[in-house]
Length: 189
Length: 189
DNA sequence: TTAAGAACTATGCACTTGCTTAGTTCTTAA
DNA sequence: TTAAGAACTAAGCAAGTGCATAGTTCTTAA
Image (cartoon, rainbow over the protein chains, first blue to last red):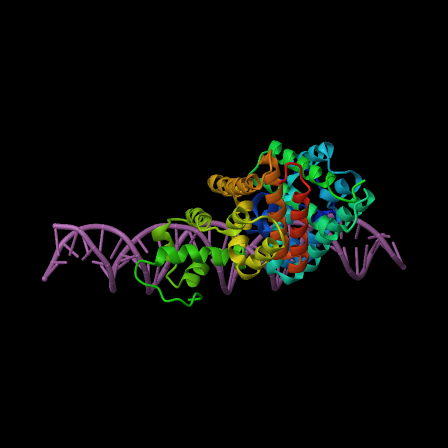
């Protein structure tokens, strides 16, 4: 088993869902096979059939599971304003735990091809935009619908860059710049 | 052959590269098989081995090929400023030709797993940020490095949303809001 | 204590995969 | 005109795939 933790009877289902996130983050959806997930979870691969029935049902369940425990940007943007402190926290989150973010980028793209995944994907992104909107209004901004979507998209795009092509320093500076753009907004406190 | 155009002797290599983009956009990297690409290109699947040798070499060649002919955000951001006109043009570009963008999102994620793809991915994103930076400086902005990365990330994130979870109207409004944020910047003309 | 059902494993099969081998057809420079 | 090499095809194989079948082990309510 790739995952070091010892499991108990009855923990297989949860271990499989966690393993899906880990495998997709590391190998992509192409690497998401019954055997790879089972090895990561430390169980027999036929347990997937038992609990979920099919590969696509497993993916769908993992998407819901990951969304439910997705801290990601939500709690950050809801509690703080976009300043240097926030920028450093976000960069550090992505550096220390990239798996969940990587999984979600894969699933967003997959949701375009698999209709059964779309509701969960839309719900996840809507919740991100909504919590960003609440944070903006809490800080005195108005007409925040499109603004919240834009700011979230900027952070989302910067996280994607940090995961792939950009260094943490460049991303942190860009996040700070996003915060500076917001300060100059009308209706700002 | 899925692609209707008739091919001539010697066009196979190019047809295969174009087919890779089409197949990855439609089915993802999991659907990128010798047989799927060959059918899309209207050739025998062993021609891939002849021209590229392996699946990963094919992907690498397709990444270079697609980057070279990638209009995407580059020409848009280089010629115009971010206003309603720009927003509508970008939304329409994504709506009418989503394949190249989808392919690039897949490849960006893949570049994290396959080291041989990283240089091309970094080069592509750097060129986007650089052309955005040039556009900003042409409009009188200063200290544009992190700003250009942030603005590009916002547009990149919004394109990803339009491709997956958001409607064109919501994305257009958010792009307009990005332009309004820029107007309020210091050192703006 | 036990029986029923849930969690779990072992084996294996039909199918798809990347890629090899062996050959054919086309182009072009001499 | 032709020969050499490039583009291209046909057939097939070893490995990996999702998943079905059949069975074993564990938990828990009665």
